[in-house]
Length: 346
Ligand code: PMV
Image (cartoon, rainbow, N blue to C red):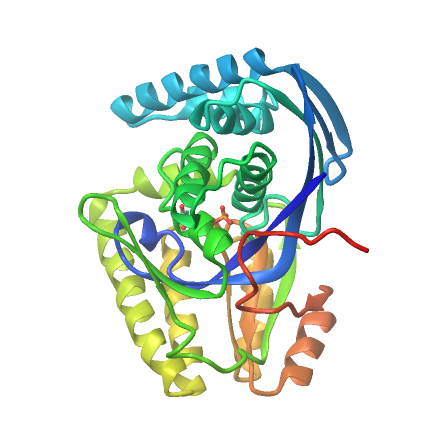
């Protein structure tokens, strides 16, 4: 039996603007998705303990559905409208089937697998659960069939799967999940990813960051990314640029351990994300309370709910404000290991 895992991620800064070629700083987090895999001659038998579902598909069926999704993606790309694909994935509950079909097709595998999926990355919350699942599945299935993929190859398949879920993802989530650590991520003009590890530059532990789950977002990442894309460019572009510049400034502030500046930059980013229509009233209330005690906070990932990232030098005071507002703060490692094969337990 093979067991692989991949971490979720959190954007310290740069969500949404990263889709338009601006840089982002993304940390792999201490929450992961695990996939146990064993060979099966003809079928994919998947037990998803996160969603408490079990399914069985023939290998061909998975590949057919993946090809259908791919065709819908291409059509969506031409039409600049992925709603048909999103309906196919969401309403058809087809994400895992499509993901596995894409992996089998890319790796030229005609056999199946028994897959057992579990983990602690909350779903649809801005912590990159779909990327973690895509990367962990790729790592497990490729290892099971001895395909010896490099991280770059795993990351490419992870991005292909993310496209089915999100239309035009930046590639930042799957990169953080594949490579792990704290990364600087940017797409070049041709859409190719530039991934830099910030380990040398920012070798210390990032303390005093606290996460909190606010509320299930009403829309998926793909829908929120499309919503921003459909805004008038005169509204979108200056805010995207401002967040991009804030990411550049954040890299310097983190390197210099200038946390007063880090807070300013989180606040600045949040006002820009809010102006793009990505806030919700519940987040506004708690973010204001954090600001009142001298901290800073923003929603993460696609926003519109989900996870909030907050910073204050006085972590105790920060947690108290969050708790008093009715939420449960938690901490997790920022800069966790990327995709890996788990050693068998002896
Ligand atoms: O909500 P998540 O965890 O899927 O993060 C999405 C991040 C975005 O920047 C909004 C989209 C992207 O592809 O980078």
